[in-house]
Image 1 (tube, rainbow, N blue to C red):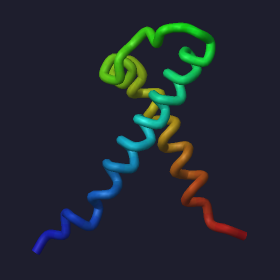
Image 2 (image 1 turned 135 degrees about the vertical axis):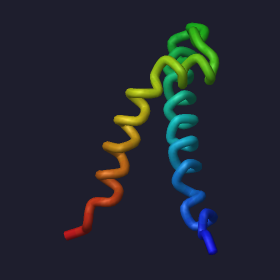
Image 3 (image 1 turned 45 degrees about the vertical axis):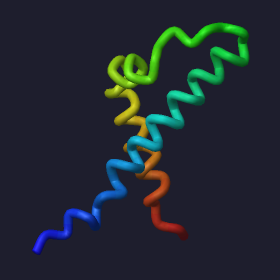
Image 4 (image 1 turned 180 degrees about the vertical axis):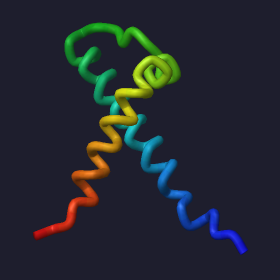
Length: 67
């Protein structure tokens, strides 16, 4: 019996993180009166390595044991 459903939240957490990063980036452009230079797909494909590193760093901070 496999329990593939038990770790289903992990990819969703990364997707949510990436989506939040995109909208934060897009909002910066909008707040300065500029048009965002890329779509969501373009943003992800050009920044995927940085997004993975930021996500791993965020995960380490979240999973850090409380003293």
